Length: 267
Image (cartoon, rainbow, N blue to C red):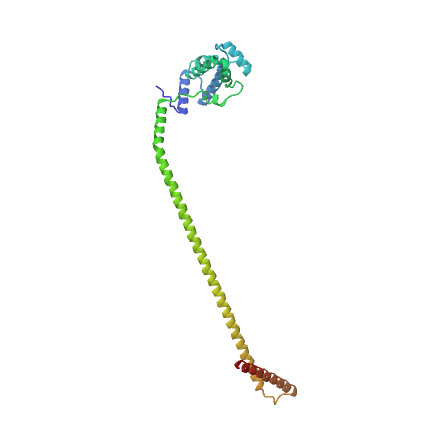
Protein backbone atom coordinates (compact mmCIF):
# COMPACT_ATOMS: atom_id res chain seq x y z
CA UNK A 1 0.00 0.00 0.00
CA UNK A 2 1.41 3.37 -1.08
CA UNK A 3 0.42 6.53 0.79
CA UNK A 4 -0.75 9.60 -1.11
CA UNK A 5 1.22 11.82 1.23
CA UNK A 6 4.58 11.29 -0.51
CA UNK A 7 7.51 13.59 -1.06
CA UNK A 8 8.27 14.60 -4.63
CA UNK A 9 11.66 12.86 -4.63
CA UNK A 10 10.20 9.63 -3.18
CA UNK A 11 7.46 9.60 -5.80
CA UNK A 12 9.89 9.96 -8.71
CA UNK A 13 12.31 7.44 -7.18
CA UNK A 14 9.52 4.86 -7.31
CA UNK A 15 8.69 5.80 -10.92
CA UNK A 16 12.34 5.54 -11.97
CA UNK A 17 12.69 2.15 -10.22
CA UNK A 18 9.53 0.78 -11.87
CA UNK A 19 10.62 2.05 -15.28
CA UNK A 20 14.03 0.35 -15.09
CA UNK A 21 12.50 -2.88 -13.78
CA UNK A 22 10.30 -3.10 -16.88
CA UNK A 23 12.47 -1.43 -19.56
CA UNK A 24 15.96 -2.12 -20.80
CA UNK A 25 16.59 1.55 -21.65
CA UNK A 26 18.63 3.71 -19.30
CA UNK A 27 16.84 6.96 -18.47
CA UNK A 28 17.41 9.52 -15.69
CA UNK A 29 14.72 10.73 -13.31
CA UNK A 30 14.92 14.19 -14.86
CA UNK A 31 14.28 12.74 -18.30
CA UNK A 32 11.25 10.78 -17.03
CA UNK A 33 9.91 13.87 -15.29
CA UNK A 34 10.33 15.97 -18.44
CA UNK A 35 8.69 13.29 -20.61
CA UNK A 36 5.77 13.03 -18.21
CA UNK A 37 5.27 16.81 -18.32
CA UNK A 38 5.08 16.65 -22.12
CA UNK A 39 2.59 13.76 -22.04
CA UNK A 40 0.44 15.51 -19.44
CA UNK A 41 0.49 18.83 -21.28
CA UNK A 42 -0.44 17.34 -24.66
CA UNK A 43 -3.08 15.05 -23.15
CA UNK A 44 -4.66 18.02 -21.39
CA UNK A 45 -4.71 19.86 -24.70
CA UNK A 46 -6.36 16.90 -26.39
CA UNK A 47 -8.94 16.71 -23.58
CA UNK A 48 -9.65 20.37 -24.23
CA UNK A 49 -10.37 19.50 -27.85
CA UNK A 50 -12.61 16.63 -26.76
CA UNK A 51 -14.45 19.05 -24.49
CA UNK A 52 -15.61 20.94 -27.55
CA UNK A 53 -17.16 17.77 -29.01
CA UNK A 54 -20.43 16.68 -27.36
CA UNK A 55 -19.93 12.91 -27.80
CA UNK A 56 -16.14 12.82 -27.29
CA UNK A 57 -15.52 11.99 -30.92
CA UNK A 58 -11.77 11.43 -31.15
CA UNK A 59 -11.55 12.07 -34.89
CA UNK A 60 -13.20 15.48 -34.56
CA UNK A 61 -11.03 16.18 -31.52
CA UNK A 62 -7.90 15.31 -33.51
CA UNK A 63 -8.98 17.72 -36.24
CA UNK A 64 -9.47 20.52 -33.69
CA UNK A 65 -6.10 19.68 -32.07
CA UNK A 66 -4.39 19.78 -35.48
CA UNK A 67 -6.01 23.11 -36.30
CA UNK A 68 -5.01 24.67 -32.97
CA UNK A 69 -1.58 23.14 -32.41
CA UNK A 70 -0.52 22.87 -36.09
CA UNK A 71 0.68 19.34 -35.27
CA UNK A 72 -1.05 15.98 -35.21
CA UNK A 73 -1.76 14.39 -31.82
CA UNK A 74 0.94 11.71 -31.32
CA UNK A 75 0.09 10.42 -27.85
CA UNK A 76 -3.05 8.36 -28.45
CA UNK A 77 -1.53 5.38 -26.65
CA UNK A 78 -0.94 7.55 -23.57
CA UNK A 79 -4.41 9.08 -23.79
CA UNK A 80 -6.05 5.61 -23.82
CA UNK A 81 -4.25 4.77 -20.58
CA UNK A 82 -4.63 8.10 -18.80
CA UNK A 83 -8.25 8.81 -19.75
CA UNK A 84 -9.44 6.22 -17.19
CA UNK A 85 -7.28 7.56 -14.34
CA UNK A 86 -8.84 9.62 -11.54
CA UNK A 87 -7.42 12.91 -12.70
CA UNK A 88 -8.81 12.70 -16.22
CA UNK A 89 -12.09 11.10 -15.06
CA UNK A 90 -12.67 14.21 -12.95
CA UNK A 91 -11.87 16.35 -15.98
CA UNK A 92 -14.31 14.30 -18.11
CA UNK A 93 -17.09 14.66 -15.50
CA UNK A 94 -16.56 18.41 -15.40
CA UNK A 95 -16.70 18.52 -19.18
CA UNK A 96 -19.91 16.49 -19.22
CA UNK A 97 -21.49 19.00 -16.84
CA UNK A 98 -20.37 21.75 -19.18
CA UNK A 99 -21.87 19.86 -22.14
CA UNK A 100 -25.27 19.73 -20.43
CA UNK A 101 -25.02 23.46 -19.87
CA UNK A 102 -23.97 24.23 -23.44
CA UNK A 103 -27.00 26.46 -23.84
CA UNK A 104 -25.31 29.00 -21.61
CA UNK A 105 -21.96 28.42 -23.36
CA UNK A 106 -20.24 27.56 -20.04
CA UNK A 107 -18.76 24.42 -21.62
CA UNK A 108 -16.99 26.47 -24.27
CA UNK A 109 -15.61 28.70 -21.54
CA UNK A 110 -14.30 25.67 -19.61
CA UNK A 111 -12.74 24.09 -22.69
CA UNK A 112 -11.14 27.34 -23.79
CA UNK A 113 -9.49 27.63 -20.40
CA UNK A 114 -7.12 24.84 -21.55
CA UNK A 115 -4.51 26.67 -23.61
CA UNK A 116 -3.82 24.77 -26.85
CA UNK A 117 -1.20 27.15 -28.21
CA UNK A 118 1.11 27.74 -25.23
CA UNK A 119 2.81 25.48 -22.73
CA UNK A 120 1.16 26.23 -19.43
CA UNK A 121 3.39 26.13 -16.35
CA UNK A 122 0.57 24.58 -14.32
CA UNK A 123 0.33 21.67 -16.82
CA UNK A 124 4.10 21.20 -16.67
CA UNK A 125 4.05 21.05 -12.90
CA UNK A 126 1.14 18.59 -12.79
CA UNK A 127 -1.16 20.97 -10.88
CA UNK A 128 -3.96 21.45 -13.44
CA UNK A 129 -6.35 19.47 -11.23
CA UNK A 130 -6.14 19.53 -7.46
CA UNK A 131 -4.90 16.29 -5.96
CA UNK A 132 -7.22 14.84 -3.28
CA UNK A 133 -5.84 15.29 0.21
CA UNK A 134 -4.73 12.10 2.00
CA UNK A 135 -6.09 10.92 5.34
CA UNK A 136 -2.86 11.69 7.15
CA UNK A 137 -2.77 15.20 5.71
CA UNK A 138 -6.44 15.70 6.59
CA UNK A 139 -5.77 14.66 10.20
CA UNK A 140 -2.79 17.02 10.37
CA UNK A 141 -4.94 19.81 8.97
CA UNK A 142 -7.67 19.24 11.58
CA UNK A 143 -5.04 19.03 14.33
CA UNK A 144 -3.46 22.30 13.24
CA UNK A 145 -6.88 23.98 13.10
CA UNK A 146 -7.68 22.81 16.62
CA UNK A 147 -4.29 23.94 17.89
CA UNK A 148 -4.87 27.29 16.20
CA UNK A 149 -8.24 27.68 17.96
CA UNK A 150 -6.56 26.93 21.30
CA UNK A 151 -3.65 29.25 20.64
CA UNK A 152 -5.68 32.30 19.55
CA UNK A 153 -6.81 33.31 23.11
CA UNK A 154 -3.27 32.81 24.42
CA UNK A 155 -1.79 34.89 21.63
CA UNK A 156 -4.45 37.55 22.17
CA UNK A 157 -3.60 37.73 25.88
CA UNK A 158 0.13 37.86 25.13
CA UNK A 159 -0.47 40.59 22.57
CA UNK A 160 -2.38 42.65 25.18
CA UNK A 161 0.50 42.16 27.63
CA UNK A 162 3.01 43.26 25.00
CA UNK A 163 0.94 46.37 24.22
CA UNK A 164 0.67 47.21 27.93
CA UNK A 165 4.41 46.70 28.39
CA UNK A 166 5.16 48.95 25.41
CA UNK A 167 2.81 51.62 26.81
CA UNK A 168 4.49 51.41 30.22
CA UNK A 169 7.96 51.58 28.67
CA UNK A 170 6.89 54.59 26.60
CA UNK A 171 5.62 56.39 29.71
CA UNK A 172 8.85 55.59 31.58
CA UNK A 173 10.88 56.82 28.64
CA UNK A 174 8.94 60.09 28.47
CA UNK A 175 9.32 60.56 32.24
CA UNK A 176 13.06 59.92 32.02
CA UNK A 177 13.35 62.40 29.16
CA UNK A 178 11.42 65.01 31.19
CA UNK A 179 13.69 64.50 34.22
CA UNK A 180 16.83 64.63 32.07
CA UNK A 181 15.62 67.83 30.39
CA UNK A 182 14.90 69.42 33.76
CA UNK A 183 18.35 68.44 35.11
CA UNK A 184 19.96 69.78 31.96
CA UNK A 185 18.22 73.12 32.39
CA UNK A 186 19.33 73.30 36.04
CA UNK A 187 22.93 72.51 35.06
CA UNK A 188 22.80 75.17 32.38
CA UNK A 189 21.56 77.70 34.95
CA UNK A 190 24.32 76.71 37.39
CA UNK A 191 26.94 76.91 34.66
CA UNK A 192 25.65 80.33 33.60
CA UNK A 193 25.77 81.60 37.18
CA UNK A 194 29.28 80.25 37.67
CA UNK A 195 30.35 81.88 34.43
CA UNK A 196 29.04 85.26 35.60
CA UNK A 197 30.86 84.85 38.92
CA UNK A 198 34.10 84.01 37.13
CA UNK A 199 33.71 87.07 34.93
CA UNK A 200 33.16 89.26 38.00
CA UNK A 201 36.18 87.75 39.76
CA UNK A 202 38.27 88.29 36.66
CA UNK A 203 37.16 91.90 36.38
CA UNK A 204 37.93 92.51 40.06
CA UNK A 205 41.35 90.96 39.65
CA UNK A 206 41.98 93.10 36.60
CA UNK A 207 40.99 96.23 38.50
CA UNK A 208 43.20 95.21 41.39
CA UNK A 209 46.12 94.59 39.07
CA UNK A 210 45.55 97.94 37.41
CA UNK A 211 45.48 99.64 40.81
CA UNK A 212 48.67 97.85 41.88
CA UNK A 213 50.32 98.82 38.65
CA UNK A 214 49.27 102.45 39.08
CA UNK A 215 50.60 102.48 42.63
CA UNK A 216 53.85 100.97 41.43
CA UNK A 217 54.16 103.59 38.73
CA UNK A 218 53.40 106.29 41.26
CA UNK A 219 56.13 104.99 43.57
CA UNK A 220 58.62 104.90 40.71
CA UNK A 221 57.61 108.39 39.71
CA UNK A 222 58.05 109.75 43.21
CA UNK A 223 61.35 108.04 43.55
CA UNK A 224 62.55 109.66 40.34
CA UNK A 225 61.22 113.03 41.48
CA UNK A 226 62.98 112.67 44.82
CA UNK A 227 66.19 111.97 43.00
CA UNK A 228 65.71 115.12 40.91
CA UNK A 229 64.94 117.22 43.98
CA UNK A 230 68.01 115.89 45.79
CA UNK A 231 70.29 116.16 42.80
CA UNK A 232 73.62 118.00 43.39
CA UNK A 233 74.03 120.60 40.62
CA UNK A 234 77.38 122.05 41.60
CA UNK A 235 79.31 119.97 39.12
CA UNK A 236 76.81 120.51 36.30
CA UNK A 237 77.12 122.91 33.41
CA UNK A 238 74.58 125.76 33.07
CA UNK A 239 72.26 123.83 30.72
CA UNK A 240 71.99 120.88 33.05
CA UNK A 241 71.35 123.16 35.94
CA UNK A 242 68.55 124.87 34.00
CA UNK A 243 66.94 121.48 33.13
CA UNK A 244 67.02 120.41 36.78
CA UNK A 245 65.58 123.73 37.85
CA UNK A 246 62.63 123.41 35.43
CA UNK A 247 61.96 119.84 36.46
CA UNK A 248 61.92 120.87 40.10
CA UNK A 249 59.41 123.58 39.31
CA UNK A 250 57.16 121.01 37.54
CA UNK A 251 57.40 118.69 40.50
CA UNK A 252 56.56 121.42 42.96
CA UNK A 253 53.66 122.61 40.83
CA UNK A 254 52.23 119.10 40.58
CA UNK A 255 52.62 118.51 44.31
CA UNK A 256 50.94 121.81 45.02
CA UNK A 257 48.02 120.96 42.73
CA UNK A 258 47.63 117.53 44.30
CA UNK A 259 47.68 119.05 47.79
CA UNK A 260 44.97 121.51 46.83
CA UNK A 261 42.75 118.67 45.57
CA UNK A 262 43.18 116.73 48.78
CA UNK A 263 42.25 119.83 50.82
CA UNK A 264 39.16 120.44 48.66
CA UNK A 265 38.16 116.83 49.14
CA UNK A 266 38.41 117.15 52.87
CA UNK A 267 36.09 120.16 52.93
